[in-house]
Structure formats: structure tokens, C-alpha cells
Amino acid sequence: DVKVTQSSRYLVKRTGEKVFLECVQDMDHENMFWYRQDPGLGLRLIYFSYDVKMKEKGDIPEGYSVSREKKERFSLILESASTNQTSMYLCASAEAGGSTDTQYFGPGTRLTVL
Amino acid sequence: GEDVEQSLFLSVREGDSSVINCTYTDSSSTYLYWYKQEPGAGLQLLTYIFSNMDMKQDQRLTVLLNKKDKHLSLRIADTQTGDSAIYFCAEQTGANNLFFGTGTRLTVIP
Image 1 (cartoon, rainbow over the protein chains, first blue to last red):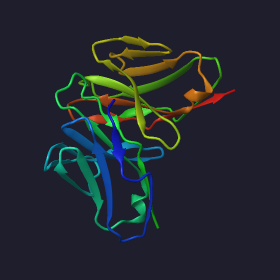
Image 2: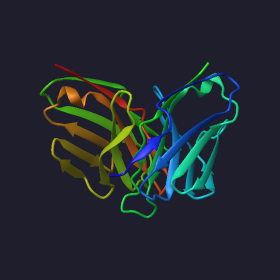
Image 3: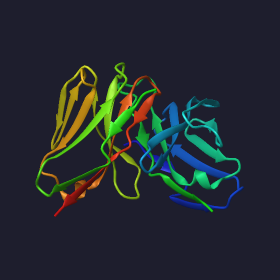
């Protein structure tokens, strides 16, 4: 079974803090994704990565950056957290060129910025 | 851009069938997915359908795709309280382009 883990289930940070959200997958997938989920808005793609050290902006990259130094790990960074970044953050991974490119999701990190 | 729409809420009685609907706008979609999210959990892939199919059945789940109308539905037979969750449909238009609907919160009434 594919396993995607995220470093924290719940996180509380203060405005202006630098925040790191970590995601690890154990299936040697090339593609990894970060989404945020807000009520009534569904999931929105922040960034994705299709290889180590490669990244692409998604629909809402502003205020975020990412890092992919190793294939299994994809980090989402909030350089200076703001209250409007309070959200549920979901990481996903997918095999490139697979039969469906199906994305497998982690359990999510609920971030609250005070 | 792509737009995937779902109703926000659905309530059914235990034992009845649930039908969750989804419409999308991009006719170049390759796969369409249904994900389930239980409270406090991430998204769990339930099922998917390739865009050249019109129906897929998997135990209690039936997916119907009307490509002409760009309409996707998920039918859950004999709905149980454990089916209470948020259901997301998602449309894939390329290797890395997955667009999600807003999610439908299914409440199963005992």
C-alpha cells in the first residue's frame, strides 16, 4: 500500500513565524503535491514537484515555497505565516507515467495561525 | 479555467441509496475520481473512471459518466453510517492537473 505521511496532524503558529510542513512517501513516486483545503473551496493546488529539485507553481503559490531535496520528501514552507494561511494542508504523491497517475493523499496537517 | 461543481450537502437514511453528483467543464479530461474524506483524515481514493467509459461498478459503488453533459455521479447502495464523510470528485486533464470539486458532505441518518 502507498503510504504518505505528514509530519504533524495539528500545528499552531503565530503570525510572522516561519513554518515547515513535511511530507514523506514510501513508494518511490516521482510526483508530489501540496494542496490546501478550505470549506466551500475544495482543494487548491499550491505547488507540485515532478522530480528532485524541480518544482512548479500551482493555482495559489503566493506566500508559500517548497523544497524537494530527496525524492521521498516534499516540504512546504510558509516564510512568514499569516492568519489567512490557517487551513488544512494535504500532501499527495503519484507515479509519473503510471496507468492513472492517481494521487495518494496523506492525512493532512491542520494549521492554525494566530 | 477548469470548474468542478458539487452540491455541498446530502442527507440520506441508513439503508437507502445515495447519489452524489458532479459536473465539470473540461472536455479533455482523462480520468475522473471520487475521493472520500472522513473527519480529521486525509483523502482516500474510492474509485476512478476513465473518460471513455460510461459506467464502473465496484461493490456498493457505481460511477456513472455522461461525457456529453460532463456529468459524473457516485451512487452508494445500502448507505451505512460509516459512509458519512465528505466526497470529492476530481477531474484529471493531464499528468499533473487534478481539479477538485468543493466536496459534498454526506450525512447518513440512522
